[in-house]
Image 1 (cartoon, rainbow, N blue to C red):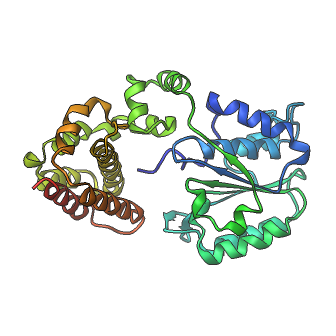
Image 2: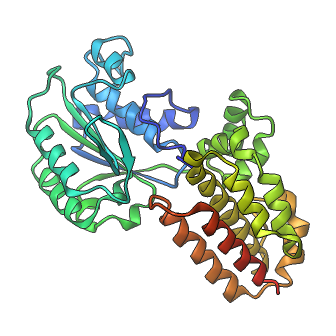
Image 3: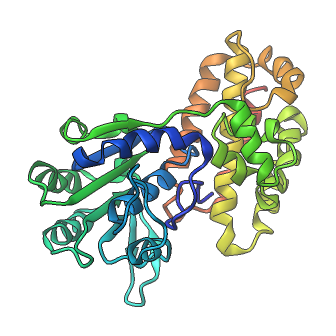
Length: 342
């Protein structure tokens, strides 16, 4: 699952972010050199960062600080070709310019950013760098970034996007203005999802844990494929065939199996989360439509092994950037799930 916050193009803001942007741009004359945009994945933080970047680079901003949308800089941002905008991500590039996802953002990428910060602006307005996700900075890269944070060149702005701000070093966080991004009201999120063609916005939003952009991604046909079969399998562990699920995963084109494993891990995590919540006396958050099945299973599972299993799911999700064997990972996790109810 590539993730809803991984598109590098400029896109219109969702309506629930308009007030946040208006508040930030109202203080444009006192804009901080670094902003930390934090919040869970799927809330549109990258969209927000790209929107702010376009506003900072605009050559004819409005009285409210918003980008005009028509100048050369605005068009360059929208076409992903602005020379004064840098995206720093956990990827490496080969000689042909093809990107490969990596585990972290290395020090070389930050050194490139430092060199960029020292250059003169091509459009003579500003320079902006978007770092996403900021928690992917390795230790050496985080230390190298401190120099730019401590001595920022004039008219150079850093926008750090983080799904897990708590993982960032305190030395970095303390040098940024915090911009937390929370979940929108369900009514606004449901209306937005409906406008984007989602047939059952409420169910999609629940399965995404209240994150609308994640809900939109998960509502796509390719993400939905096999979901009902998987949930049915998880609802009746005795009938669960890890080999059959592995075979379904192997039937996907080879280049898509990593993304399919990511979807599988996401659904298993949401299911395990709901099961743990019910076992602890709570209510399911992600799969309220499966409440009865979850309550039946919760009466059969021991909480400590379930929590350990949840930690294992998180561990495997963190390894998705590695060259895993998707079928073997899926089968092993499903077999362990069955053993919880043996």
